[in-house]
Length: 92
Image (cartoon, rainbow, N blue to C red; front, top):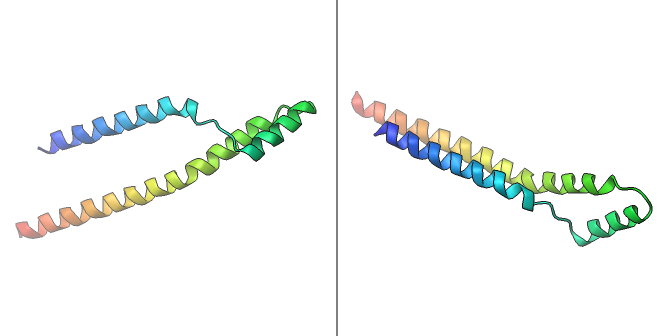
């Protein structure tokens, strides 16, 4: 039973990682102000600002998801440990 549960978790983790890896290419977007700034700089010959803005947007976009992922992982570990302690208490 435990092996089957681990296989389900492994399959869902692999599926999630594959989904994230395929959707990264579509996440490069800019707001209207960022786009105007990049267009203004490109018209003056500076082409490096656009890449920096895109990376900044991706950083700001991913930070809340990383924080929620960490909180979810800690919560999962706490619940798993609590369940194991309850199971071991029933044995004695």
